Length: 174
Image (cartoon, rainbow, N blue to C red; front, side, top):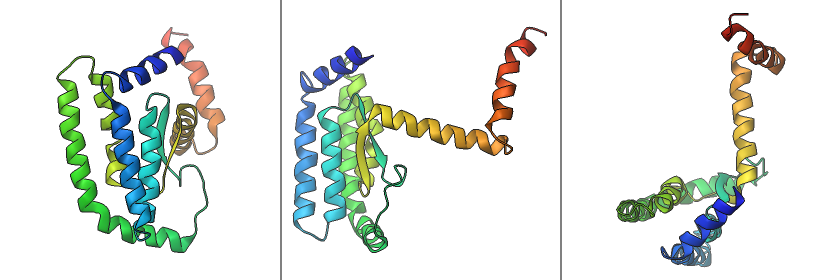
């Protein structure tokens, strides 16, 4: 699995020049952060630039999913700035959709197009996003799945585990 991620990252750099996307995202983030008013957006775009440096093996997640505590004033300000950023984010997302379409023309470009498609949400809303390793993102997904199971088995996960343990016997007619 690790070698496939490495191969994906190598292909991301050459022949598809994914580092150019990373540089543009980082520069946009630097621009927004330098304006001070757009700092929440700029910080998110710089995290997106980090993601684009090695997209295979990393993921973008919300800071709230990571249980990172944030200042309430900063959160409110970030929401206000996000509303103002939306037209710019929409333009960036449309440019990304064009890039996705062009990458889908080649068979080898499909994995690269999927990376960009997966990160469209970050282009639309970069505020309070964090670039993490795939292992952390997988753990967060497992946590969400466990919460979903908890909705159906409110007395605890033991009932769900018992049902899963008994499932093969029931399927085989036991």
